[in-house]
Amino acid sequence: MKKTNKLMMTGAVLVTLGHIVMAPSVQAATTSNETTTGKIALEAGDTTTTNPPIVPGTDGNGNGPTGATGDITIDNLTPLDFGKVKLTGGAQNVKNIVKDPNVQVTDKRGTGAGWNITVKSSEFKDTTDSTHILKGAQINFPVGKVVASDSTNTAAPTAKAITVPADGLDNAQILMSADKDKGMGTWADVMTTDGITLDIAGGAYAGSYNADLTWTLGDTPL
Image (cartoon, rainbow, N blue to C red; front, side, top):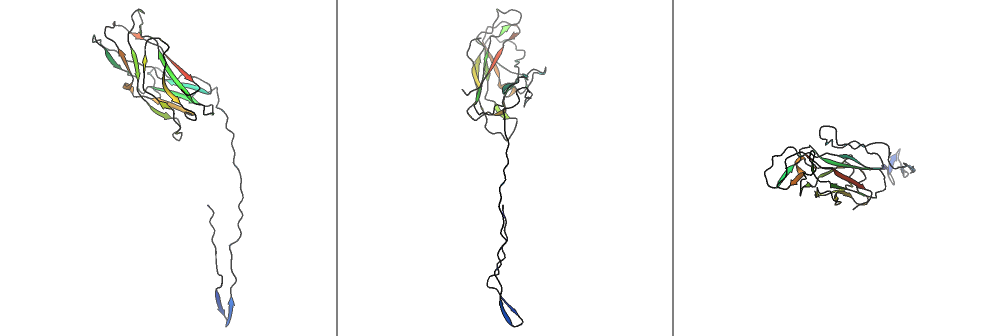
């Protein structure tokens, strides 16, 4: 902001030694305005470094960070654990017990092209008898809180509530998507611990079951 002080004495009358003298007008000194420039060149990010999780969200064994490198990456995927549950004979809804489950994506391309991340699940099979399968099982993901590594970054992607059938079929569901000019930088979809649940049908065999979740990051919106 330019601040200028002006002293105006036009037409002032001074009386000195009996003479009447008209004081001359006084104008502000002329100022000079010049312009300089500042510049910077931004390039796509380093594709050899990993991006640490905004929220740890691990299972206590260090599982979560993927160690992925590139200009667009999945940085963190919290493993799910539904604990030990007693069968009731009927359908059951079981809550995840891993704290702060989250999915994190970093986009360092600097193009604003957008992206999407999807997930699908294999069948839950007994680890000692693969013929025992949790029929009709499905994993429910709530709408999470989308947070950025930089709080001044407000062009957020969109998180969605989805249900993922644990049937081993190619029916991936979109958990998070960034439209054009959204989702640049590092973003995590952080869900409540017990917000992720597993539905299992009645008539299941007792046993320890595992399933594989496949996460796919696409470089355009969906």
